[in-house]
Image (cartoon, rainbow, N blue to C red; front, top):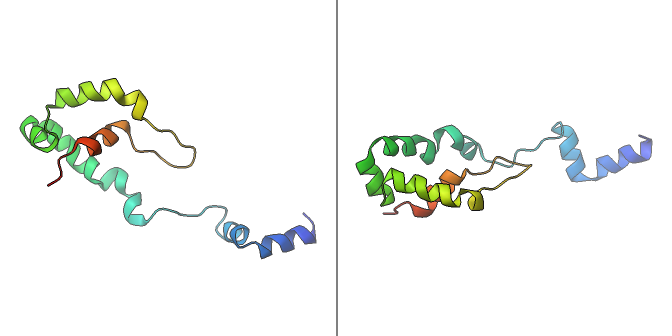
Length: 101
């Protein structure tokens, strides 16, 4: 890399930021980055699954019905990304049918 290329990097704010941060930037708030282990789905879903009556109150269906629907539509609602971890199909379905009070 010659001197002219180095000057270009210093003039471009995005490249400068990437160089100063080691090439990585954080686009997710810390609160949301803990979603995988402290989010509502992770904390509540398994407990509801273990209590079919409460699961029915929350989702208005039996756990078996939820699994049946998920099995039928999972391929069409699953997402893939090279840039970030995608929301699971099970989570997408749960959010779509959950009861809002």
